[in-house]
Amino acid sequence: MTSTPTRHLLLLVLVASLRCGAEAGYGDGGEGFCSAEPSSECSGGPPLYWKVTHPTLAPAHLQDLPGFTRSVFKRDHALITPESHVFSPLPDWINTLGAYLISPAIGAHFTMYLANMQDGSKSALPPKDVERLVFVLQGSVSLSVGTGTHSLLVDSYAYLPANTKHSMISDESTTVVIFERRYSAIEDSHTDLIVGSTDKQPLLETPGEVFQLRKLLPTSLPYDFNIHIMDFQPGEYLNVKEVHYNQHGLLLLEGQGIYRLGDSWYPVQAGDSIWMAPFVPQWYAALGKTRTRYLLYKDVNRNPLI
Image 1 (cartoon, rainbow, N blue to C red):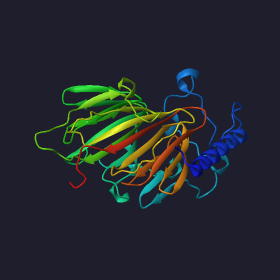
Image 2 (image 1 turned 180 degrees about the vertical axis):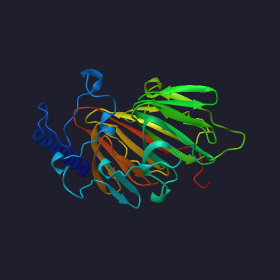
Image 3 (image 1 turned 90 degrees about the vertical axis):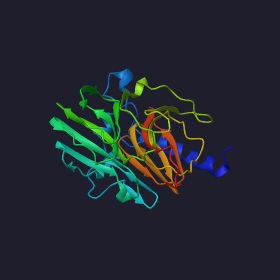
């Protein structure tokens, strides 16, 4: 049962949301953190995940304030917001700019980065023994693996086992988010190439929770991480304040809400990314008028002592 202080806090959050919505001018084109964009699925509006690749700083009146950022770095978590991204040429890639959002320098055992590709862009291979997952946010890429070629569109992804020879090329403006980690091998086990899309993955049961969950990778023992796609309708929230040994890397694809990390509470919106260290308390509530969807890295199937 929710405690009295928690109920009071939720009430304050919801009141702030409604106030922000009124000031932003719902329905009349106003902007603000709590203003909601119409869904492209039913309105013929912008493409899926467009807010990730075309972020707007909110509140809007702070866009021209020098030095302003919502980004935060702490010992056990980080919030990295779009206005503080720094893009530079990706090593060995052709005609591609990248922004590393999470890396071992922050305390993580994996990397998460954005790659902006153009006509004529081509990927490079990850380091030896490093596995890679690519998820398309905008545009498309052609993935070549051995003698096979796969076309990856928005909301599609590919998992490349460690030491898999492959390349990605693009003939249009394309943005992908990439996760990489050094594969933790298990004797007599191996992972396989996987190419898929979010909408082809089944909804999974979430006992005690209301959000919708899809997993992009198999849950079998050879795989040492997974990527979860989690959907929340406005007003829905995690029933459990989680504390666990797994690390997370999160990219908010749609919507907005409040994320608790440790003792801090952060307004978040599409385009924001989060790193969560092991055992940091974490909790999320969705606000606004449209669903929240986020993509979440989670290490799995390995003994934390190894």
